[in-house]
View (cartoon, rainbow over the protein chains, first blue to last red):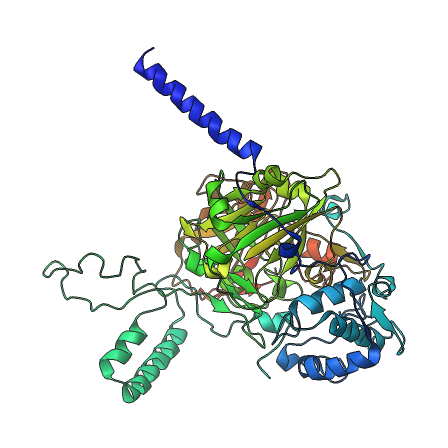
Length: 185
Length: 449
């Protein structure tokens, strides 16, 4: 066998070896333990991913006053100078020239409120609220939005059952903007 | 805590106005009055600095623009030696005579805000990494790559975590793509608002990205049959999350660690970001730390309450992910001044989130007639092209426009068409034809034709 042929054979073996390593695994990456995953969460609209715990509207009022009001206002009306948007109001404005998008008027799922507050609020100490505090402050905001009663308690069972006012206000917008191809354009 | 604030879009139009109104004119085309005022401001600043600090230090610090180092200019560079090797420490800087910078939007806090790429000054098709537009929701985190991991779990055969070194060992791809924020040009729906092309269209940048395809990772972990969506999560203070259709990830989604020949810049997601060619910028999750495979979308805050498009009937579109075909003339553009009638080279940028740019046309009479433009670089999928078109300006008022057609046959719409279809409240995905008016005195401004 010529040197050139030997060389080609060696290259082929190397190439096959490399692709086989990636196909067989677990060559790359390490297994994930439950402990690895414990620090992560993502809450689905049906409640999947919600942690144990609970919170009442009255407990939420205290949390809100201490941790949220500075940016979102005493009446949840928003503080533009602080960058905190209004959390309530705005129902019936979405088809008007000045739509007001709030948790009350726009957000389709209560699960999103829980997920977002737990992961990214309060802005000055993100991710610092306990599950009970997030349930409580969610209950408080939803109560002030007129979505749940003042005696409501939020937990992994009750939160996904909350029907948001704009729950039916969205549709899947994927794909091309078909209206651009309408005959009347 | 006045500086603190969690949100952004409280007043998008006000927020899009830059604090620093730099004029992106080409050399010699800056309005003279403005130049005078700027010179005045600069000399006032120098005087203040000189009184407070050592004269030499103040002058040097002020003379070098960001990304540059000041050196004294010799009378004749052929009559003395220049600088020795590695005087820059081994990492070069741009010329001290190049001054273009990103400008920021006006928001209550700079921790959740954005900056615009100076498009009028861009040379060629790639945006320098240091001028890539930014959009952050919780500041720019500092992440040690040795401690960073990407976890892939959920509806997979074997959940795994990958170190940055693991990912760099895997087969990589290198591809040029633009990223455009879906809020790009949002000030222009109702009336012409922004003063320069940097602010009308500067939430757009193009880079060469290097990384591992999601499909390669998917083979490592195995996907379950029901897998349809993937949650991508960032390691910033916003812990940014978006749900991505798995067919997109499997067609060209990339976990990028390289940008323009070096590691990602921190403000672009160092050490890892998601790259979804043609999708709205918010989905290209920066500081990527987790991919959770699921059979349904998660309906996160960003994909429900923020990046959704409100239609005239009060309902809103979810997951309007692809960026439409779009183009803009960067020269001449608003706030510039043409010194006198004559031949000019109209220049601009065109792109589409659905594939390659097929053609670009230019009009100098507000869209009554169109001429094909020259395309400067080979069109690549979901990548910008540069175009140019010579124009003999006769000194009369003119309205300049450009129109992009992509390889799917989609034609960039006029503003009237777009408003008729979507109303004035949808905020995002404004891709209408942009008009610049050239007045008889040569001044260029942002108009609706």
